[in-house]
Image (cartoon, rainbow, N blue to C red; front, side, top):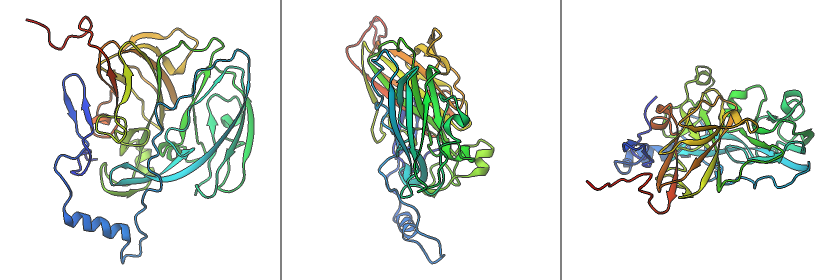
Length: 368
């Protein structure tokens, strides 16, 4: 694999208190006219009988990390009607690099679902023919039933909807994902998400909540190589990812990324739902410039959380929950502390904390 250093890549990352630069961007200017002509030829197809390279049909598949439902505010079990459909879309991983993602509701990770222990979920699942080329299903780790619901929701494109009903018996944050046989392919390409089943007393109130989905892409091209790439089963079998990403895109929520950093204020408490879809790698969530003041290991919301944790281990197929106290202004960098995934593979996000300095906590310019 090659580092993400293609000359036309955007500059993405400023990482860590030491000012180490992780470069995945444009440092040298535009590509040559010859390269542009080659790309044009590829997109228009050639005389080799191959179809044109696939181009994006959606602006981005990256889910908005701030799109988290409000906390549970009811005290008795409720019934919820949820409709989930699958959508396959070609989108960019970074400029000039595309793949066909598989998604729930057109986003990676899939939508964040929130309910209370004891609630009843009536779920209607659909695989519309207009959006899908493969069969799909949904396996909720929060479901007590065959395949977590996957057995009864396996549908080929255009086959019609399937409806199941289940009671949320297990409080906690739980993964859901597609499990049609080639589990690794479907999860890698984006088919995973989180359902939070709040306990009867709910979770402690915080000021902001963010939702990020970590996953690996195993593709038939090199990291940063222009063009359209497809899933590589051999690379998946050896667990050698081309990219490791938040929400399907290199650095989208980092300095220099398409959306830029997330936002918080001094004095706030921020909760992060760290959903490690995998399908294979152990994650080591770490907030550079802070610690997890509360850490809900493996999404366990009943046990007392660990306190002041610098980092932890989150297996594939687990959503963990971390909280941070924002005491000083400046960037918080969210990384997997297997740092080659940050520097070489594209996994990074920033939280830009704004507010008044607090020199009692951190003073960048103390008097002699």
